[in-house]
Image 1: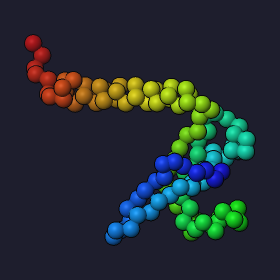
Image 2 (image 1 turned 120 degrees about the horizontal axis):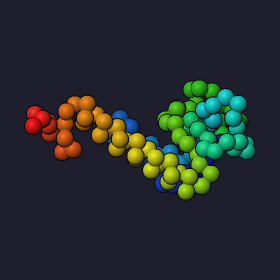
Image 3 (image 1 turned 90 degrees about the vertical axis):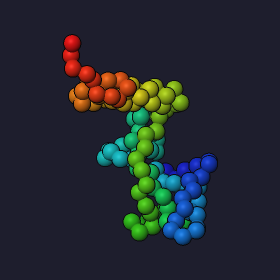
Length: 116
């Protein structure tokens, strides 16, 4: 799936040139799933940057014409995305709390004193 993004991705390459990416290709990560139409929500995708715009006209591209830049998730609506983001935030907070306990640290990150 070819998508156009706003604002574009801007990456400073070596030296002083900037690479501006406005178009990305999304492809399903899981075998047997499709984006035409999306057959399951959320839909897990590869996010690919085009290195050669001629691939758009042909509709087919070679590995040398693209660069995998990330993985992503497509949601049916904003509410689903927000619900998932809150879930990740809770999981991250629980993970930090567990790590502190395992390391013998208090909530302030300082070592806990001996038990009284």
